[in-house]
Length: 256
Length: 256
Image 1: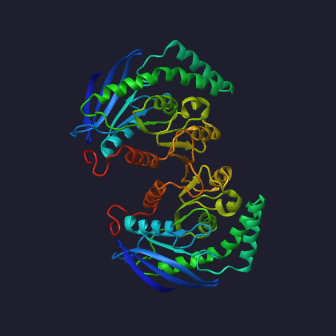
Image 2 (image 1 turned 90 degrees about the vertical axis):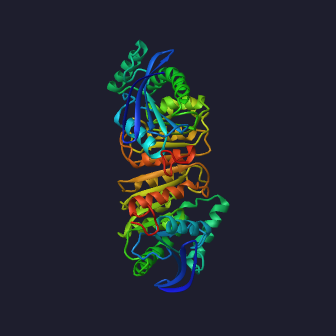
Image 3 (image 1 turned 180 degrees about the horizontal axis):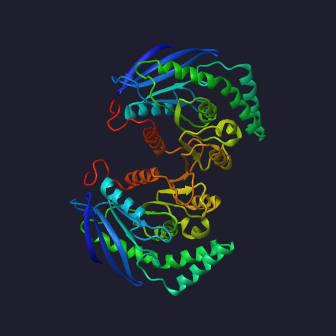
């Protein structure tokens, strides 16, 4: 793990890093509250399709987790996203996906293939990132949560199913068509976001995915509007959800 | 409005009262935080079928609204519930409902008839209760919310549709079969609770009711489990929802 830059503002330090992996270099960002030693809870943030580790929504969430909850947060560019190269396989599937969307063909099976292709890389990458950041003094081996919607949900599901260190997750904006496999192996508390008028994910596919999770505690939050219109109060809710399951907040960043 | 008793514990005063109405005496309870003058936000609490104004869940919710949010809360016995007499019409419909449930007949139309019968009384009664408590110095004309699930939802929907003083509501555990009429006239922010394995309300009927509300801000919260198994964290969520829409909390009861 190689840190390449470090900036600090509003009480939160942001560090860009590169992690070497079997699939090449993985570029990432780590956010931590200034001046408070670890260990602390950690949130892994999975970005949406076509986005990247520092998309505005990602940085906003990460900064709130650090400043308001006292957490560390980390994001990486998913395979074929952000600063990472696309492989031939990625290009082929993306071209097929665009073609089906243009011609009104059935996109779900191709999207599922794309997600499976990316997940084969991203699951071991996330585990390597988690290993590396937990070795840092300012992160340590505190409880870990995962936040990811849309692509971040599709890649999060097989990761959470495979990774016992994840203790709670906020997922959503994704349907059963592309994520059925590992969902039934997930048992940690979940908050699952559905956009009631999602133009990309059929409502029934969202509800069917929620149904599959084996978690005893899972709450579906549905709000009106399209795929990109999750209301701001859901981020407040996510902060409280993680506080309930991972701890720390009253008087965060440092407080008990 | 005649107060018949007054007790105080843990910073919350509880007063039993009787309000005279066109349908006879309506027995109720008012909870207010001790020693803080009004006006303050007010929550009207509608109880479930077969319950009453002081059922344990009702009192717990009311005390938390008073102690944690600085609100007043009021509950009354719904028609044919608690200390109120049953009319002949009530007995007839209840007998028919029990008969259909025993024989596996279709209960929904009879339940809808029962709810309509009760709502014809409870809507004007709730308005009279609201008029009366808003005249009290320790309540006053602050913003008003409504909390009611199951029967409390079925009777709340026509009331909220008819009463412009209601500014936000938590509803749920009820389906479109018995509440379709007025739902489309409701435009205030809503939090709507669904039990994913509700043995009394079909899931599709719950989702269809949520769909009908005309509110720009409405959030469906679905949790696993049966009709009576709403998880405790949903009351925390309701407190935050009302705080967001009706105000007061940081440093409640009295604080700005």
